[in-house]
Structures are given as C-alpha cells and as structure tokens.
Length: 334
Image 1: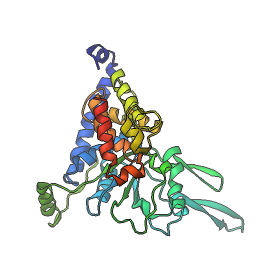
Image 2: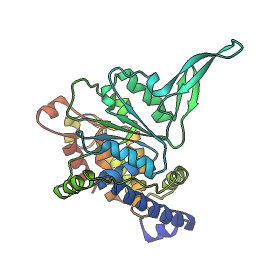
Image 3: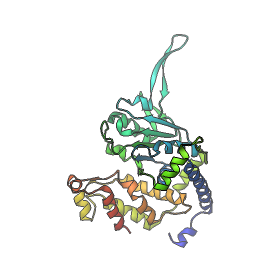
Image 4: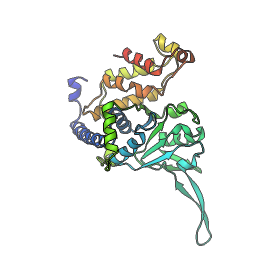
C-alpha cells in the first residue's frame, strides 16, 4: 500500500488497530505460557477466529490440539465446550432436542434442551469419526450461526467458532468430511512435531508439581469489536489482484497453467477468496500493521487452499501432493 493510501486511513481505525494489536500480543503471550512451541499454529488459530471463521486442526495425537482449544477459550474470554465425535454420535447430541414435559396441572408441552453447540468456542474432537449425517448437523451452525430443531430456529451465542481436530493417520473407523463441510473451515492448520528444544521444555514444564494456567487477556465483547475492525482494514489493489489470481489459477477450468489443468480434479470456490481477504487482514492486525501485503497472501495460501482442492487420480499416482501444487501457485503470483 502506498504512503498516500496509508494517509487515507481514518485516525480512529489506526488507534483501534494499535490497541487491538497490543491486546492480541498479550493473548499470544498468555497462550504461549501453556502451549509450547506452536507459535505458527496459535497465530493461524487466532487469525481464523478474528476473521469470524472456523479452523480444522490436523495432526497426530499428543500435539496439544485439545489443550490449544481450551487455552484459546480462556485467554479470549469465550465459553467453550467439547464434543468427542464417535460413530454412534447422533445429530441431537450436538444441536439438542425437545422433550415432552408435564406441569403440575397435567398440561403437556415441549421444551427445547440446547446441545453443546450452544457455546462460543466449540471443539469438535476427531470430527471425522462421526457419520456423515452427524457431521452435517454442524453445517448450518457453522455457516448460519443458528440451528433448527422441530421447525424452530435457535440462535447460537456470539461469537461462535468451531475448532475441529482430525487425525491424519488413523483412518480405520473414520468418514471423510464432505467437500461442503470442508469449505466451511477458513483454515486447515497442520500441527507438526515440536523441535528438540521445545520438546525438552515440554518435558520439564509438564511433569512437575505445578502446571501453567491460562490467563484471560481479552473479553468476548472486545473480540467482536476486533472482528469488526478486521473488516474495516483497507486492502490494496495489488493484494486483491494476488488473491484473485491465486484462487482462479487453482481452478482447472479457469487456469492458464497446464500443470493445474492436468493435475487438479477440482479447485477452490469464491469462499476461498473471501477467506484470504479476511485472513490477510487479521494477520496484519495481529502483527500491528494497518493493511495486508502480498506476502501475507502467499503465507496463508496453504491453510486456505489445501482443503479446498483435490488432485486427480493420475497426479496422486505420480506422487504429486496438494502442498507442491500450492507452492507452484504461490510462485505464480510473486
């Protein structure tokens, strides 16, 4: 963004952004005191929430995915609940159900009992272990922010976010997430193994008498104001063009790249561009900047696109990966 464009930013936005950035830095510090060595994962999770979206955490067991979600709830001042997804989980176990009650006079009526989805931060643990029918129970909640039971709509608390986890290696007894549900997640966040030094810190810190406790840094009301602020941050024409180029070149029927046309079965829809527009702004706010850059688009391309694309059978047979394909796309917009 040019110096002239920066001068056009209202002073109230500049002041609000500085205050929000300071609060978010404190939140990251508080999270880092409990969750070790996952700074990149924490940044992406906060960016997803700031963007008003949901995130899918993918990693092997024992990498603090559950701890991260619980800590985020505490630090961001959000009520949180956890659902352990299993093959016998039913939709009513998520959204709630109506029960028939009888009062003292013998009059009968139905009363709605809310399910665990009525919270501000929902952890859907091992989401791909539930049946497709149960997985779809989250679709309306994630997109519309309300659920319908017995023909009656029930609004969810504000803000509402889903952080789901799935295990990439234990495929037995799992059901693939449908494309429509995958598209509801702003990010797919890959959670990797810690470095040697980080793992040493984990061993020392978590096997003693005293465990670190998460401390609240902001409130739900402040978070909602930050989410509104994210949507007010300006985006330059260069960044907008980079987002459009990245998303459209990833589609086999619109791309100018032979590699994409040959190797990609289906590409990202418009929601991917919306995710990048919001996420790059959120990243800029977290880092104390007033506007995103093309580097932000490049850095967030992987988390936004990898669950919104699929390779052809032939490409997979040749050993191609989605990550390699996205890396090639990123060089195309530099």
